Each structure stands twice: as C-alpha cells, then as structure tokens.
Image 1 (cartoon, one colour):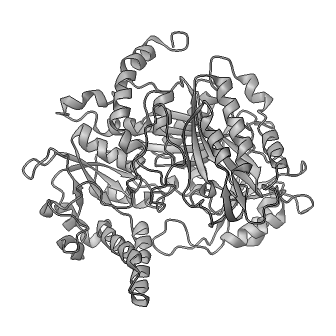
Image 2 (cartoon, helix red, strand yellow; image 1 turned 135 degrees about the vertical axis):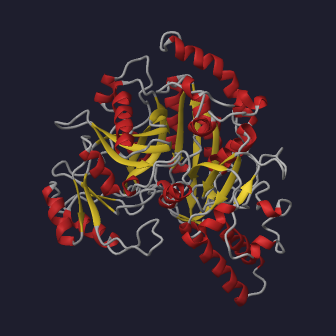
Image 3 (cartoon, helix red, strand yellow; image 1 turned 90 degrees about the vertical axis):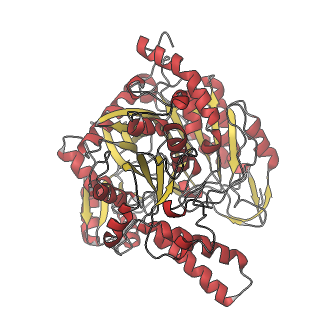
Length: 631
C-alpha cells in the first residue's frame, strides 16, 4: 500500500477498511441472500457448496415473494398486500407502495425517499433499498415498469386459464395470485400520476431502476416527478446506434455503423466493411464438449497477448485470466467481420458475429420485424444495426456519478472464448487495476462517454474494446453504456478486493449530504469526497462463469469434479443452478443466459489465483454426463 498509493489513498483505505468489513458483515444477508440470473429468474437457487472466508452461507428465502419486508400503502400500514382481503389488492388505481424505516411510525414519516423500479434482486435493488432505510433513514417506494407488468399479466392470465382447465393447479393459482398482486405496483399512467403523487408524503430524491427494460420509463418518471438527482430523458442511453452516434459527434472514436432498413442495405454496408461473400471455412467450428480434447482447445485459447503483458508492470494487476483478445481463433484469416444486432437489447440477445455475407443475411432475417426490447408500444425492428467488428480486449467499467463527477468503482476484464458453436462465451469477469496503461485509457474514455450522453447522476455499467491490432491499436471503442448496475453479485468480490463497492457509493452520492442522518449508523456509510477517483485492487478477484459443454438428458452430476473445484484455494463461493438436476434436459452454454453456475475466486497470490482458474476451466467439460454420452 505504501509503495503504490498516495498518502490520501492510504489514509482513506486504512481508516475505512475496518468500517467496510463491519458494513459487509452487517449487511451480508442482503448481499448474498440469493442468486437470480435475471429479472424473472426469481426463485432461489440452492448452492452446491458452502461459502468460505468472507462469504457466509446464503439464506434460502426467495426474492420472488415481493413486496418484501413491510411494503404497504400509507393508508394501510398494518396490512400485507398479499392478503386476499387487502383493500389495495382490489383497487384498480395504482397506489405508491412505501417501505418506511423500522423505527418510523405513522406520525414520523421521513422527509426523503428513493423510488426503486423493478426491484427483484436481493443483492442489487434489495440491498440498496434495505440500506437506504436502515442506514440512511429514508423511505423507499417499490414500483414496476409497464414492460415488466406486461410479463406479469401474461403470468396471471396463464394461471387463470390453467385454473379453469384444472382446478387442482394450486401452484399455478398461487403464481397467478402473486402476479396479480404485483400488478398493483405498476407505475401510474399519465392520467393516474397526479393522484399517485399525492399519496407520497416526502421528497423523492431519485429513481433507481434495476432492469434494462425499465430504464426508459425510469427516466420519464424521474422527469415527471422532478426528482433532485436525474439525468433527464435521452433515448441515446439505450439505443445502440444513437449511443455511438452521440459519442462520435463528441469527438470520441467509435465503430463504423449503419441502420439498415433492407437486406440489400445490410449486405452493401457489410461488404463496405470488408466482409467477404465466400462461406468457405467461415463457420464457427463445433467442439465436442463430451470429449476431453475440448480441454486442450479451450486452454489453448487462454494464452494472453504479448502486447497486453508488455504494457503491464509487476506492480499492477492488469489481468491474468484467459484470452486478451476477443477475436475468435478458428475463423479465417482473410477478410473482416461485422456485428449485426437490434438497436436495443440485453445479454447479447440477437447479437450476431458475421464472418461472411451469408451470416449477415441470416442475422438480418432473424432480427428484422421482431419486437423492440423494452418497447411498450409494440414497436418493431424495422431497421437492423450493422457495425464494424472491433478486435481487441473487452473491459467493463462500473462508475458512480454525482453532479457530473464520475468515480470508477471497479474495472473488469472479460475472458470470452469460442466454444459450443458460439463465438463469445463468457468464462470469467476479472477485477483489474485502473492504474495500468490500458486501465487508464479505458477509464478515461468511459468518463468522456458518460459526459457525452449527459449522465450526471447514478450508477452505470459500460463495456468497451481496447483495440489490439491495426493502425488504431491502443484506441478505445464503445460497446455499450448501461445506466444500471453490473448484473452479477459483484459486491462481495469488490468489498474483499477493493474495500468498497458501487452500491454503497450510489447511496452516498444520493443520500450522503442529507441533514440529520442517523448517528448510530455513521460507520456504515461512505464519504464521497474520500473515495478515490479510480480504485486499486488489493487482491485478485473474479467471477467464473461455469460453461456447460453437454446437451441432452442429464443422468449424472460429477460431484467429484465439483468437489475438486470447491477445494481449490482461491474458491470462496460456488453455485450450480437448480435446473441442472438429474432427468432434466440441459443445453450447451452459448451466452451469459445459458451458463450453468458460477464460482467466485479471491486470492492474494497471483500465481495460485491463475492456477486455480485454469484448473476450473479444465474441469468444466467434465461436470455433467448426459444420456448416450460415450465419454
């Protein structure tokens, strides 16, 4: 610490680290209560192994049973909105569902509050809301976006139809009841807005949206409520084409791109980018995940690039896991590639890597005319986005902004590999230092991107490519900016490796300057002015994404393999998702949605950290046995 940090950074870390540990342990149930892979994967997934070190065992409570804690309307403080006789459950007019700090009474309403939209995950929105109430003493409002309510409406309708078909469907009935109740949390329509606002007896300081689909409405309702901390409305923060266009006009390097209304336009622009017509040897090779040779192949993809290591120094953690380039190794050397995708999306859905014109045709036809993600007006993808492929190392930057001051909370480097017929499969998301030459370039670009998009407040998770080839080697290009949290349970890793996390930073940015904060919880709060502009890791940390190489009926889970993973010195937590049970049909992992679990790695020993990761990657193809598996 003495060698690597300024005096102010040393004092901040040493003074804060003990309070960080206390805060982490105190709020551990909220951080590690359960694991939800997405907004609607809400049921608790039992962990295969127990957690070690700073990671305590997880609770078996479910995050689906919302509203949580004592969410009530102010007029019915003592009731539960899940009770069938609850008056709110039968009221068609939306009411704000407000959660008060535990010590608050009917005559002691807080002066301030935060609105949480689509708060489904205990270790994201659940953690933030709980800490806002218990540590900062503010109220929280829980609301659902129109898009999410549409999903719940389908669930409720399905439950009612099933009930009519079979009166014994108690589970479907319960699901339908819960979905119907949650619809009461829908944000108000313009006609209902004034009535809804009259029921909120405090100032709402900001709106925090957990889902990608609700971000558009979150900005709209922030403007309508005139909350103190907002960025206004800007569609470019979600539209991938507009996003790059705004950055380009602000003077930042971006990929070449075009919105194509017809297939001919898409083919013409792809050809202009250098994509070849031939299909010869251009298909991504299929690897047989049921056989051990796959191990050799995926491990050969884990060699780091020379350029990356040449720029690094022994004092900084620039990343040690896996591949330093995102270019698939099995594609032809000649020609160039492009990316075809919709203008809005999430989790790489309908994002296609195209090595030839035939790929472009197939991708365009799959996307064109489909529904726009997050749209509540039945908007269709009448245009398809074609972009230049940027070859290099992919980074993710978590940033918290307060009045235009952007502080990096964490810098991550991805290890993505070409397996199971897919070009970019996540293997690891690794914490790295922001003080390396690469880290500085990426973080500087990220801050400029937020300025260009008009982001002054809130938490963002953005992805960038650091080019490693050609004349522009060393330039940074945008992948996307997401005005929400990093969608993984990052807080335990970051707390252990850095000492603070983006969630706590966000609460301090919004609430830290409020008057009369509870003195008894001062040790659980951050001080914005003392947080460094850029973080420094004090241990190696990574989220390992467990990749499934089998497909078919699962007949055996190799517990010997999983126990070997668990026993590795760097493994602090591990989970296999509950779908992977004997008798279930499983599929190969092709994207972040289809992985089969995760492992958290923490170690001060850099070499041991990398050895443990490499061993986990070697063991991944051996975790499961499917029916008729000859291996």
